[in-house]
Length: 179
Ligand SMILES: [Zn+2]
Image 1 (cartoon, rainbow, N blue to C red):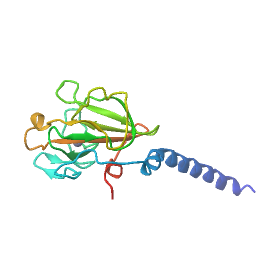
Image 2: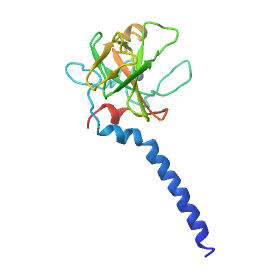
Image 3: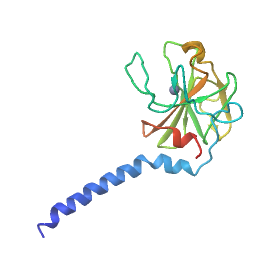
Image 4: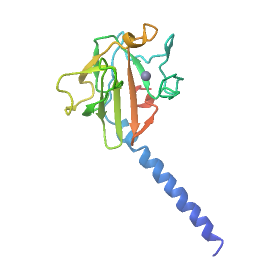
């Protein structure tokens, strides 16, 4: 009987870990089966920013920044300045989000998809009155701003998209690109 006690503890421990993983992934599972649309179209399709003279657009790409964060914590999507930005999922535009507190030229929004999940879309001018509104996937929520003015023409105009699961930034790729 005594030999069974440590075994039981390990099962409880494993159960807790599995439960935490399930809770953490809840946003993804709830969302995968809901409607999805491209965030923006560039030359007629949604195009990830690859690598250019200004850097790479992928999650985890190296970055040199004043605040010391050494990696890209989002996914960039190419856009044409002034083109429409669409809600990728049904949700609520919860609030504005400002990428640079000291640079009022650029703005963004936070789209709440469900209790677990928010999507931040940066370098876009929000549509007037959109904050606080319920939106549907595909609905226009703003227009693309020109980030090249800030970083120079080596950095092409793009949207910076972040996905937060329970407040933790995760790779946006599975949420914003259909496979
Ligand atoms: Zn970015």
